[in-house]
Amino acid sequence: MRRLVGTVLRKEVRDHLRDRRTLGSAVLWPLLGPLVFLVMFNIMASWYRQDRPLEMPVVGRQHAPSLMAFLERYGAKLSEAPTDYEALVQAGTLDVVLVVPDDYAEDFASGRTAAVRLVVDSSRNKARQSVQRAQRMLGAYSQQMGSQRLFARGVAPELAVPVRVDELDLSTPERTAATVLTTIPLFLVMAAFAGGMQLASDTMAGERERGSLEPLLLNPAPRGAVVAGKWLATCAMASAGVLLCLLGYFLVVKRVPLEDLGVRARFDLQAALGMLAAVLPLVLAASAVQMWVSTYARSYKEAQTYLSLLMVLPTLPGMMLALSPLQTQPWMFAVPVLGQELLAAEVMRGETLGPVPFLLAFLSCLVVSAVALRFTTRLLSEERIIFGRS
Image (cartoon, rainbow, N blue to C red; front, side):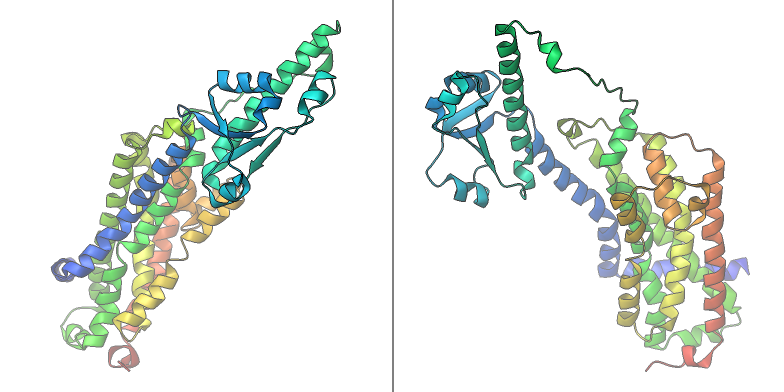
């Protein structure tokens, strides 16, 4: 039995490796996540980089010389705003424009509240950091002027602040980084599905379409051995996809300037091994379910359609966790896909989990695998599956 399984396994892997185009697609999918991560976070870091000067065009700068001097002292690069500044802000050419009205000087000199206006486009992410820096500078100037006015009237500024709130942040660098690096567990789980998708389609629906499934089943080998060999071959390719995706992230995270985003990530070998232990059992369940679904398909294209829809499954828990973070419960680790994403996220946060969550996740995937393989083996005993190609 073991020898038969090994023979089928070697045949399927060898045939799959010969198809360069299919193999290239299987390699590209796992690398998609690290490539997106590299490009996206480099762009975000360039937006949020603090060492570049804040360019702030100003309308009516002559009305507020003291404010202009304060802004320049704290790193703002001021210039005269063009007449069509609102259109330029909407087009994304300018991030922020400061408008000082004509009555600013009169209100400021008389001790009244002097209003200024920031012209922004809040729908543009690229401008968000510049807008926040401008708001912080103007807030600091307002606080400083308010304190000076109270001093001039013999009033201690502390009287205007009856309660001061001091915040003690107990988060570790790993936990802070995990909130930013939420895409890593999602793409690792997707790699578990994408890595073996091509082989699962070809080894079941592809052989059924080519008419090579009947001769294979005529051999004196139990159908369970044939299914097990094909499943192990699919698992091998899916595992390679997960390893490739994890290796890509391991190399990319070290080359992304996360410090410019205020994040200190520690993605070391221990964290990588923990995430591998979290996600790798999902390969067993994903490969078995993909083979089961592919057995129903009459052609390779039809199987690809079904499995592409199945690829939506790993994105649902990731979206749910991103939009509405859950309070982790032990039973959640026993839910395939959700358990893997939670485990990988907890490992990234540097949490000490112990063996129980990993064991729950592994056993649940093993149960799903056994059920799916059982159904697949039964399907290969039905004439409509073996001979039905139309």
